[in-house]
Picture (cartoon, rainbow, N blue to C red):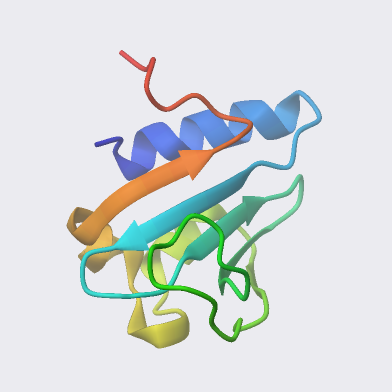
Length: 105
């Protein structure tokens, strides 16, 4: 599994090259899909309203909560009580269509 520090570097590099990566996440103790979006001047976290690739179906979205940096997001309790610093090891799936997590050394 990719570490937060690896994700941060990859996301920041993608943004530096004009991207806005959407990073989809599933947690072992949550039935919803969640998403981080990295922007040039902030990032966001949300519970997704669409089915995405979850096996559980469609749910109400939370709307985006914005953070100044990925580090601030990592250290802040978010929607549904998720604290990435504490809950990173509960991630069961992480995917982005702009970032290739599989080919990281």
